[in-house]
Image (cartoon, rainbow, N blue to C red; front, side, top):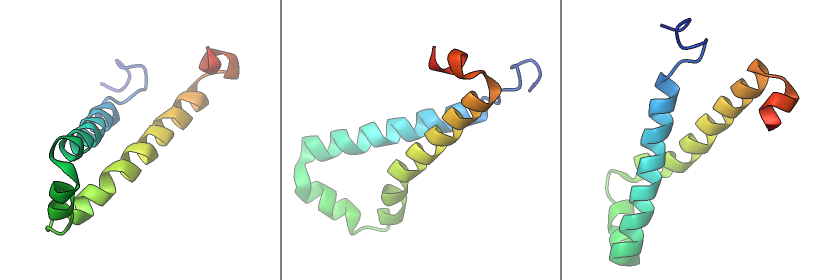
Length: 79
């Protein structure tokens, strides 16, 4: 499967999309329901998960961008 995908695993893309959707959902709920709702969620047992969403998204995105740079030349990457 990896060779058919050109040495580019798709599992990380699925995780990145899931994290991006989680970021959008968190911000949309916070915007829609206000800071009282956000505070009530942040004092719940979901707090560690919510605090992990954004750093995980940026870490995974950075990992994927670095892998893309490693697989291509600088000019192809910039293009």
